[in-house]
Image (tube, rainbow, N blue to C red; front, side):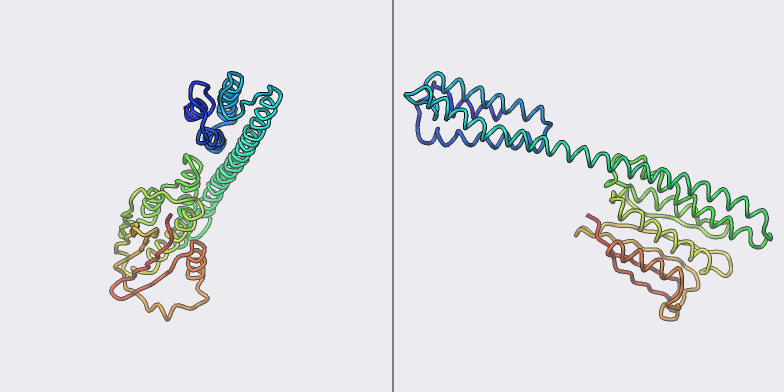
Length: 295
């Protein structure tokens, strides 16, 4: 429509030729670029055909900016205009189409990788469950807990595989799965999280952080075996989000946790990966607060 409107005004022999109308002939590049960048090559070719059609019609009827006394001169000007306007637009449309195909192939490959990772995690979890029957009864709950964490991670990868886009992972659903996985008979866990969409590069590390902190709280915060764990995620409204893991356990002194602690190293590395900041407070319970970019 834009190409037809500009073509009619710029090239039509029905209007008097002015300097402004002559300049409008080059404005047709705008709908052509729009079609090339936002639509398929077929739409770009259609826009180019409309523009060329109006230019040929106007020039042949003695109107438009390319009409001259000599037909050969008019034809040459018209030909150069069509070549200089239409060919770059068509080439750009082809380049954009190829780029989109490459991105689609990469996303499909990445989805397949996540799918295979999910399947492998399920196999590992099943093997651990089988191994749990060969250890002492006292160790069996710990082995089963490890298998359960792996199964949760597998469900997160399944969610990624089923998402419409790898830029739209529902992290709220993942956090609710994690909270459910750490619950025991005496320990309750809940996740208060909106259905916030994050890209895959942020969603997976954040889910791993949640698994690590929630599992550590369930394991170490409640010597009596009873307590409550809460996972909370909320957007801050300035391109960032806040994620907290709190418990009402015995607490600990953060400065006394050894730097060599595996759990602490994992969490800090994952927080750095999402370019976040970690703050830990402890008193009558423990709170881990992470602020990270969430575009």
